[in-house]
Length: 368
Image 1: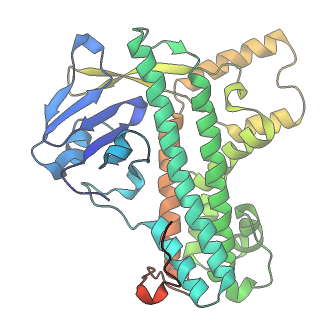
Image 2 (image 1 turned 135 degrees about the horizontal axis):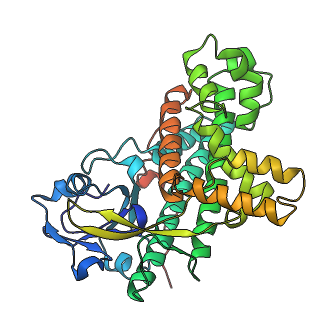
């Protein structure tokens, strides 16, 4: 992570908000239209940026670091870290993307092409999830900014605009990429975690891992027990099962925007201290994606006006308690990153950073 003080830091916050810190101590929260006031404050030190945001009750999605004119002009992407890779201040967690890439490199040098291929796929998908999460946060911000710019923000009001489609699409993309990562990790676990007893089993998905291995091993192996609960749709800790249900819903059954009888973004107030508020938005996720998929697999979702009206009222009540899509994807990404990081220790070949010297240069050519 870029810890240089001569950078622009743009913190992505839940609800589509941004906190911008140009070189110096001043931080601006953007956008802000509540009470016709601009939220500006100073941080006591460069390293206190994240801590101060959290103390104000703001929830971090991630941070963009702009350190060159090309990044500011959007020629190159900024350096991006999701909150799952950040500890209390500016210190990164173990960088799984780089570690898995370095495992792949080292495995190639050792001619272990199976591990090299799989580690490379895991590294790619970790980065893909990071990028998809940033895209989702960006689509939230564009929606919120447009509402504030046009002075159409109204707390408590449900909305859909021309920008809303991109939020739904970004959620779909994250769910697809994250479940590809989930299945690559399952494949790795069969090959290198449970290989001694299940070397002949064919596993390429998390569902197959649960059915063929975890179902048998969870009574004896502590790690298998954790994964068995994570893949249990009836468990409070079944985060992998829930992730799979959301992915299956949007891939096999129905787009998220049509998953229930009503689907809108909600304009909300985020509290900044005791008496200050900021605008924000949320996309309530359906609470029971598995039930929706099951019902749709049996035919038409509703067959009469009365049935539609009852479903409408039920969905309206459930949406009040529903989890926001951006918040959910942040937590899912954090859990996947942690799982990928925990699995590194099982790799038979350790990460090795590529080092190139002049001996690696094959040929020098003069450019015409």
